Length: 392
Image 1 (cartoon, one colour):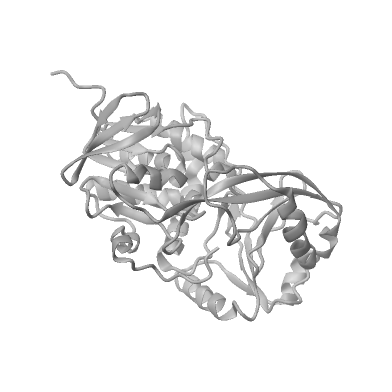
Image 2 (cartoon, rainbow, N blue to C red):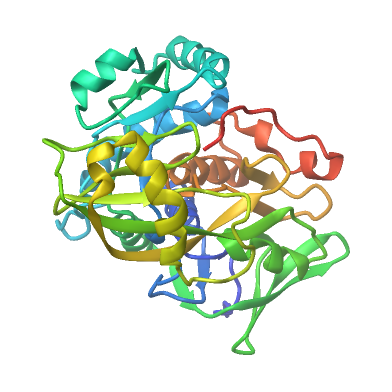
């Protein structure tokens, strides 16, 4: 019997963090599966996760998002051991330096409700008064805030190392990573049949998973599926401040949406998502944005940061679900075999472990470890957004 090299059980479109995690979880659950992962840029220079602040946090206001992060915490604790290849362990530089959400009168009710939910699920999150915040981080001026919620288990890591570890482990246990671009998801009737590639090759599979991140809508459209996922530019700036904090600063999120944290070398990373952020595949960054908008906000909250040097900046893309800023997960109801893992809106890195496990369980037919059906794609067709307050 001749087996075609172009015949797969599962084809994953996109070999970023979501695609790599899904490939690993699938083949780790069933090593008989033939899995092909199509990635157009294996250097990952424009991958959203590697261009992010690489934050991992428990502080959400939707139960399932909190549970997703709880599982991520579990995975990351043992990640370097489990992802070792030939006795070589990845170094993901996992630093649990905390997340501090500053709360003002306008956001207090939402924050208190979220904190209550987090605690009911067993999360380690604390309410800090302005005095406690000032005592812990003397450089801060919390005068305009009523307090803050601090998650000491939250933190950040080396996103590129996590991605490479998933990719390496998935490959060593049998997944194939192919450098190419999907130009069409092929269908017959209401079922997927495979993909056509930019190289001219055609691959066959009964299951296709769209893990294309910021490119998800473009990919889905080739199968006549319309997704409310937009590639939106987000910018991050690296600062060298004249006054240095005495120790690491947590990822601190101000009520305005401005966020910052310390980085290796006593530097500060700073960003802010804004309504006017452009849609499209634009990776340029603008120092004028920092100088005119972000620096004054930062200096108001951290007065000693009024003297600093802008070292550099960069831009990456959020794959924003414009319906409700939450994930779109599961099989598209109108096309059998087409699975979606899209629209993570900046949360993909921390959600990849749980999403990869969930998709593998759905596809293989195993019992669900965590029911994530709340993110089902049907809500897109029904125009029923999830209700989650205080999304960052």
